[in-house]
Amino acid sequence: MIYEGFDFKKPDYPAVFKQRLDFYNNLKAHPERISAIKAYYRDHIADFINDWGCTFDPRNADRELPGLIPFVVFDRQREWIEWVIEHWRNRRRGMVEKSRDGGLMWLAISLSCSMCILRSGMVVGFGSRKAEYVDQIGNPKSIIEKGRMFMRNLPVEFRGGWVEQSNSKFMRLTFPETGSLISGESGDNIGRGDRTSLYFVDEAAQIERPQLVESSLSNTTNCRIDISTPNGMGNAFAQKRFEGKISVFTFHWRDDPRKDDEWYQKQCEEYDSVVIAQELDINYSASVEGILIPSAWVQAAIDAHRVLGVAPTGAHRAALDVADEGKDLNAFCGMHGPVLEVLEEWSGVGDDIFGTVQRAFSLCDTHGYNEIRYDADGLGAGVRGDARHYV
Image 1 (tube, helix red, strand yellow):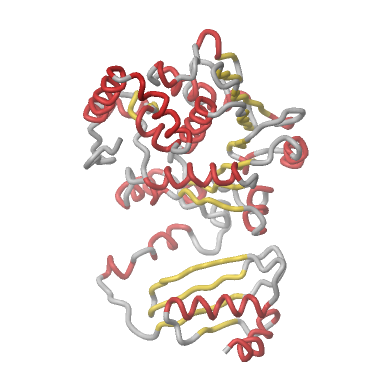
Image 2 (cartoon, helix red, strand yellow):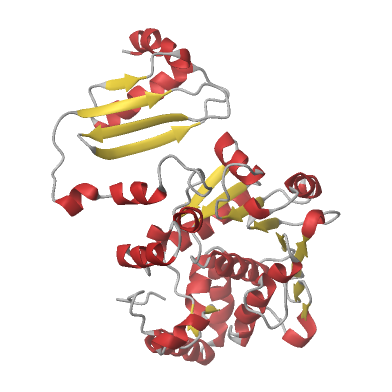
């Protein structure tokens, strides 16, 4: 279903429930269509969540809105669902760096329940550093309890035979029609001795002994997704994030249609700069004390020319920072005067400086830059000679 004109900042939830009810009544009148619709949802998980899923937000009370609300999937959430499924199909590992309060764990458990309802033999694991974060019956803050709430609010025709009294145990949800399973674990032994189709590690940057978790999960799954807000650079999550070996999905608060600059400014007034950098700005270097450039300065620079009414002037130029095969990444940016227009980064592993120069020149051609600047010291010294071959 498409909820025409849905306003995420001023949501009309009764209208969404009314549209769902009309759809459901039509299905009950034509039950022969249900199997075909399930076959469609099997390959369109985001639509299944959007059509039938519910989530819970107790903060709605002060806005005179219900706590239990329809899960209306916005664009970036839909992109994330497709990203996870693509990694699962291709047996790839992934990482998700996120701002807080984006509903990502609700999305992860809703995706997992939906896959277990619609696919046979799925086993999805969830791990976190503390057991109460994974499951605490009756507490919607915990991941598995979110799953119970998602399941009990689906129409019975779409629950896959799930009955709460029989198919919901501590740290465990089972799906009788498909033989699928969701399990939870905590501590250092996350994933040890188990086998899963897909595994989510929650708040991976906060894991106290990540080397033990890495060992436990090494043979558990072909698709592990680490999810976290940053916690500085001194942890395994940050190190893997910047090695360039693992696919990264960024879920920033600006991707959330419920939030805007006014909301962000209010957060900045209530919390200190370190909390803002870590929890909202996905800023690894600024999410610790003693930083050189405060996160607030970085945020203030975003779209500053629009706020100040200054049109960009001057030359269109590009710049390149060469990294070669180390853990650092090659970086390319394109500018029109003071305005950053293009920003890309990539690993140099398996390539050489000539390959980096080729890619940089290709970006210049694509975006119309006639001039490129680079650091001529160290690794960048080879750019000049390689550029002659390319042009």
